[in-house]
Amino acid sequence: MTLSMQHAMQERKKARAPKVLAWFAQRKTRRSIISVLVIVAAWELVGRFVLTNPLFFAPLSAVVEAGIRLWQSGELQKDIIASFSAVAYGMILAIVAGIIIGVLSGASRAFREYTDSFFTALYATPLVAVAPILILWFGIGIASKIAVVFLMAVFPILISTAAGISNTEPTFIEVARSFGATRLQIIRKVMIPAAVPFVITGIRLAIGRAIVGVVVGELFGARAGLGFLIFTSGQTFDVPALFLGVLLLALAGVVLTGAMKWIEARVAGWRHVEMD
Amino acid sequence: MPAPDRSVDELSVQHIGKEFATRGATIRVLDDVTFSVARGEFFVIVGPSGCGKSTLLRIIQGLEPASDGVIMLAGRPIGGPSADRGFVFQQDSLYPWRTVLQNVVLGLEIMGKTGTAATERAMSLIELVGLKGFEKHYPRELSGGMRQRVNLARALAIDPEMLLMDEPFAALDALTRETMQQELLRIAAAASKTVLFITHQIDEAVLLADRVMVMSARPGRVLETIPIELPRPRSLAVKRSQEFQALVDRIWNLVSETEQV
Image (cartoon, rainbow over all chains, first blue to last red; front, side, top):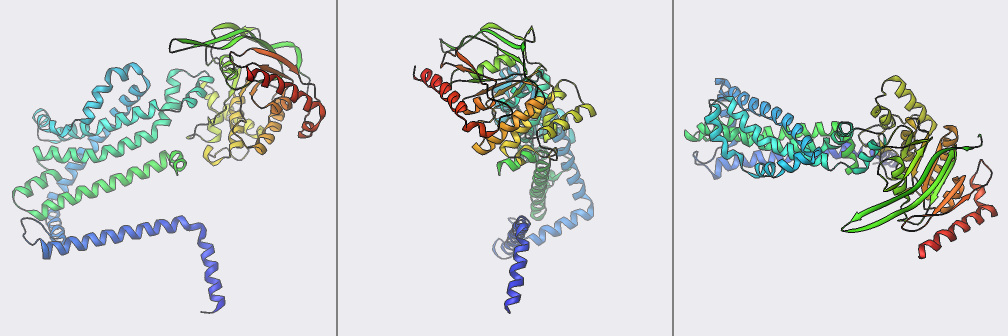
């Protein structure tokens, strides 16, 4: 290598220096890909050579085969749509109700004092335990799943929103007061924007619980859904299909949480950067 | 700069007292505070920390009630906060989720004034405080001095008769503080506002003020009000004059005496 070539390479490195962030992101991507590949290989090898009893485990290739089989029969799409719609409707209801009640609870001391212990108790209760009764009330269709998802998702959103509202920087409220703001203006212009990052954190926590909720709801009684797929596959010892259901749920969790992070960076970017 | 018209009282503070009740005991923080500020005057209050000067300013703004006394602004007793007083906070009080422009327009927005006129008003103040071109920036992208400029523009946007400033430069480094003092003199003159300014820095008080009021340690009382007859405009060079030093020494003696009590 000639000296001038070395020099040229150094120059190129210098030019790249401002792109350190992009490079870092690339390394992160590379590591994620490597970890996925390792897991995939390990899964396949364990399925083929270690846990060979098809009643206990299935190699990844068998899971993929089951996926293709169920997709061709149209069952898989039905299950995915059933679970996804229940999560979507339940989450929308939970977000709307959670934010409204959370704002009330954060902004009104009386409301908070009447309801606080009640909400905390419900948040701590494993609400999946009430899934059977919800199925009795709402039937084995989507309504009961929406109800379970709602109950699982609403409390983290509500509690987190209320915390965001009541933890608004007192100086920010003083500023609005110094301009003669009414209570309603303080809530709208100060407390709610200040609470946005908390609301998003609440929604992120709620997503995981919503997925648990829909699966449990489907286990107790359903006509379709990924939980239903897992349940019926377990009953018929179709282990590859069972793993397929679990895998898809895990993927859904990753995708939805990633989507929330994307939204968070856009809506509450001001806070994100400040914390760095 | 037109000389302040001393014949008109803008603000008249009469026998203000303030008590806080804490765990059974009553603490008296302000005792019979009486003074008045003329229209267009730059009035500075100094005192040891804990003398209740910030509380006094909050009472004048209407953020807190007084225990006794009356405050008149342009001949009318004050109630709560209103558009005739603009408050500049000590802390970093800009809303981090709003841009510079959105922060400056906040007061107008709360008063129900929105639209082009409000935006134009805000833009002209951003220009006045020297931040033209930074309208779309977020507070986190600004330095401490720039944030306090936005803070000032926000208070001025509602076009108050009076500016109340609570140690606005206390958190700035020495160099930025000196620049901001000069800028404040320029801006207050350009906007022709009456200013009530609180500080614990004596040289800052002498540099800025038409009159300096010295308060005692708790309970805060008026010790003395000293006219500062240094010529304007005042540059930093004035700080080296004997007259300036004599005034600083005189105030320093008053403050240190009360602190030892």
